[in-house]
Amino acid sequence: MKKGNYNRFWRWHFYAALFITPLLITLTLTGIGYLFYTNVENVVYKDFFFGEGSSNEQLSIDQGIEKAKEQYKGYDVTKIIVLDDPYNTRLTMTNDAGEERYVFLDNHNQIVGSQNSKYTFSNVMRNTHSSLFVGGTIVNYLVELAACWAVFLLLSGIYMTVKSRVLKRRQKSTTRQRNKKWHALIGTIITIPMVIIIFTGLPWSAFMGNIINTVAHDNPSIGVPILTQEPPTSDINEIPWATRENETPTSNKPDSHGHHGVSKTNTYDNSNMIQVQTLMKEIKKSNISKPYSIVYPSDEEGVYTVSKASNSGVTGLDVSPYDEITSYFDQYSGNLISHVSYEDYGILKKWFTWGIPLHEGHLFGWPNKLINLTVCLAFLFVILWGIKTWLSRKKRGELSAPPKVPTQLSAGFIIFMITLGIIMPLFGISLILVIITELLILIINKYKAKA
Image (cartoon, rainbow, N blue to C red; front, side):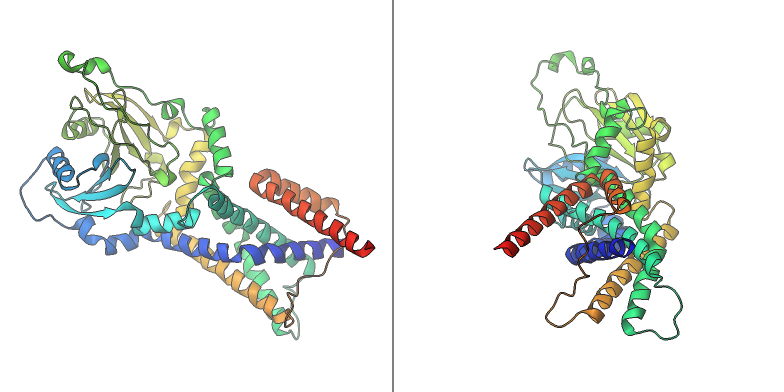
């Protein structure tokens, strides 16, 4: 039974690796790319980030916004990113089709230039990493499934390394044994950090991430505070009486599940709203320092949302988890209504706040990046040496899969797989499909044998 257990793990390890290796390589390479997106963007987009417009005339932030609206017809400002010097201010402008542009204003609030948000380096890396730049539920599930099976590969690899004693010193060893040893050694070393990286990435995954978010929202005491889920409303009595009956354009609420802090909203314009310059004075009075983002109200009762986030996905905007804050300002008076800080979060929300920047590599500066880079490169090394190990034993014209095992399953194997299936529900669903497939193959083979 012990030998059968080893062979079963080996066989499942082999087939899982065979199917998901291309995805794992893609996810790892794009993860490395995203790890250094701030460094890349600071160089590639330096003219946008640090350059100056064609005029030195000093404008207010509101005048700069109006100029941007005139220059980019059909687009309206939905978000403002106010960064520390020497970064320029970044406007997120959205049209009715949901397309986004980033427009940059210099220290005179003059327009420096613009980008199509979809094709910035960070968004290309992020969208490829999370959904292969294709998107859609099936693709998102496929990416998450690859991450789940990667956990199985790492843990089953540990089991086989211990059982086979592959790391034991030998007087003489074959090429295959050396490849197998390197594959097992590096895989064992990186198992814990790699599992941490995978699990800190799951909060924004399609299936498990949705479950985690649902639990966090349904249980404010351990997850997302009620105030974050249901932002306050502006005092509509602040609208001048003479214009209160005028019809005000409305829009959909912002997407509360925006990936990595990215939210999209339809444009909304209201002449009764306070100017951004006035709002920024109120923000300063409230002791909110740069960097921060300002998200526009989505309708006549909405509020200005001012936030500092540890996982914004915007170059120059990320802050320490302890400094994370979301504040709500009345769109008519500019008064601070309420705010939510890190201390108000439940344990799940705090996990997101620490885990996501750890996953992205900016929780504790360059050491975080270097650790993540080392683990990712080592993981690619493990994949490469796994392929070399297979090729060193592969016979020409054959798949050379590990030997078949008896149909009887050990209790240990069953408990291990069920546990992983519970921890990672999408993995559990895929296991059921694998079992059904194997049973169908078994039935077909028995039918053919009888025939």
